[in-house]
Length: 416
Image 1: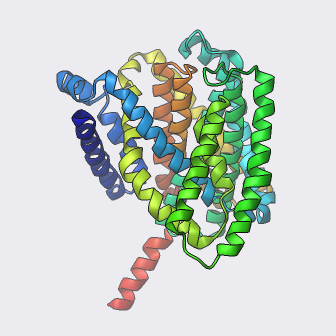
Image 2: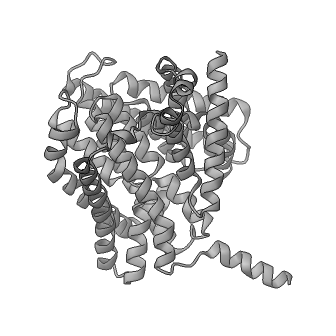
Image 3: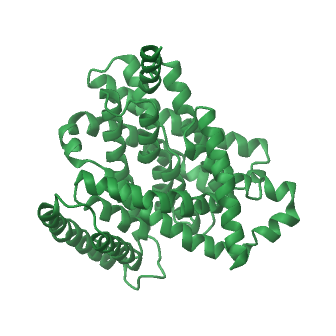
């Protein structure tokens, strides 16, 4: 127990420091937190001080990290689902549907084309062709909704037409990606579900029907009666219980508990006061205490030393180019078709190219399912970092105004 507590202390402090440095450099905090996790892994700490690394982070301790980080991810995915505004999605469905569809279809198609070559070189022999292709397509086409929202908030763009459109596209992408992920996981052999594939699909359909047509309406009815009340201790306990039960149900079906947590967030009543309270209460626990363990676990699985040959780096660059060209290219074409100018079109592409934490969740699921080898896992982690780090510099290069800085400058001028 003392080792785990010491590990958590080190992880929290390192990711906190790296997140602070990232903010100072104009990047999202999550970039620094991911890099902090990699620094604690074999690529940096393990190479500089192998003995100390083996003592501090022995392989036997990974199981505890896995359990605690999964609890953090369940809370995190619930918060993501609860913040997706489906009323705005309905209002913006024409533009958002086209842009999100094309920004997913193009990189997914490119991933399908490259899947065989990557599978032959960088996949464990047990990985099936269809699951590998689906996981690769999802990995290259996903957009990180929470990271994108944080970047927009930091730049004061969340209420601008570009910001609203990009958030709607990211919301559609998240829903589509997690739906595809559920299908991909259902195709895998599962030790948690003693059912053939067709029965698992059927039971998954029953679960979706219960959540969307029973749990969600019940939540809305409760919200109508309690709308004027704050989120009480008892109500919070009931909500968390539903989230955990939903996650347990999808885990039992052999999909993944995170899908159940995400769907529970989709079904959460859209009461602004409740949403704010959930974010305040859960984000501190998940973001400060539990998610850093996920970053550390990802860092321990990231082996930059495996990218040790020119050929491997060539494939890493190919994966990176497919992800960038597919995501940005699809968004730019869609934006132009809906009447956006070139600046706004490229800016939308740059925003949707943001990946980050949600990408790492998908990669870790694929890694645990033995779909991706350690080498391919590392290549895709590098891709997630680079594409997320590109967002802010691209927006600045395109001349997209930083509204937050403008407001600060205006206030300073008034004060002077």
